[in-house]
Length: 111
Length: 114
Image (cartoon, rainbow over all chains, first blue to last red; front, side):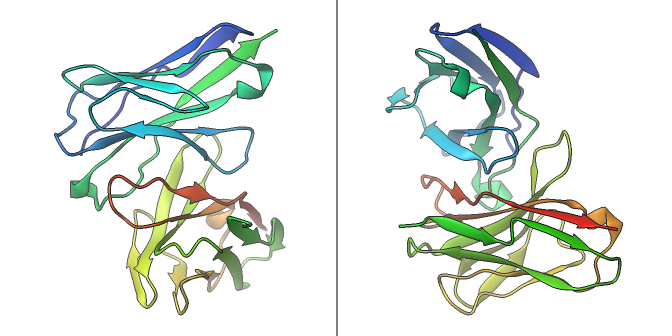
């Protein structure tokens, strides 16, 4: 199964773009990259997902490298409410199509 | 449209007691699942269901039972609670189990077993 590697923590200044990296060097061709976040101990919140192409929605942008071995989640204008743990997940058929959460990146947005 | 609703939000049990954590969704989703989250860790899959009448085990199924008699509900049963089951429990649902389908999570049930 394709595992992910994320930095344990990051800081970002309020109003600046937050760029959260994720390495998934063993990803296979049909596996999707998902991003979720968890604020305090609330339920995980879906942000965005993609297969090959870059994706954008009202919350964030997802940039996937051409070889698909890494991706970056971009929060274009970080606010204090974006302080959370961000999880990068590779969803794979060889693990039953399940979501397997690692320990994520703890993002702190600084005023 | 309430999404995924979990009850109760908080519960304290004594060792050996039984209880059921409730999970309901109103989005007509086929796929539902239960996770637990321990301090400083990510979520771990307990059980899941791909439709009414179908359930299967995840990573950490021991000590938990599930059933899926309707599309809307997916209760999680602890038959004899143990302190090791102290955790925060999250229920999730999605339209299907397909790789290209996002899941939506409830707000969690914080369980303490003393």
